Amino acid sequence: MTINEKTIRLICELEQHIGSNCYNPNSYDGYNDEYGREMRYPVCLKIKEDGEEYKIKENIASRIHDFTPEVFHTMKYKFGSNHLYIGLGIAELMTALEERYGLDFEQLENKKMNK
Image 1 (tube, helix red, strand yellow):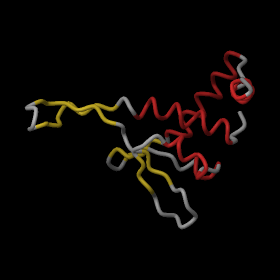
Image 2 (tube, rainbow, N blue to C red):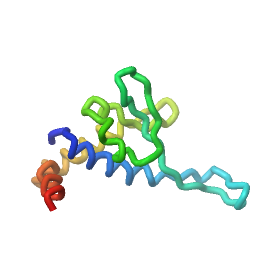
Image 3 (cartoon, rainbow, N blue to C red):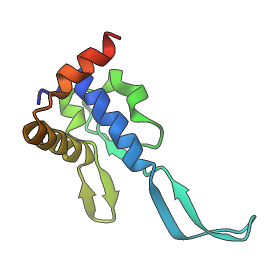
């Protein structure tokens, strides 16, 4: 699979689905006297060349103009001292699906854009 603007956009959209399914059963809302909270898990990444890491909670597909393949490789979730490189994980999953089912996500995205 080629990592280009179209595939990065798709990976960002897929990440939004994953990141939006985070739940903390131990959080407490005192106003409503309820335990548990759904949230969008933030993505950490390095957008600029200064090496500074940014935490983004909104849909990162809206910031696609900031992304390069180098930036894409830094997308991760931080769980304490553990890091899950979500962008690379999704790309590996997409590659596995391409190989297993004869898909071509770049070609599929081109068809979608031409509609």
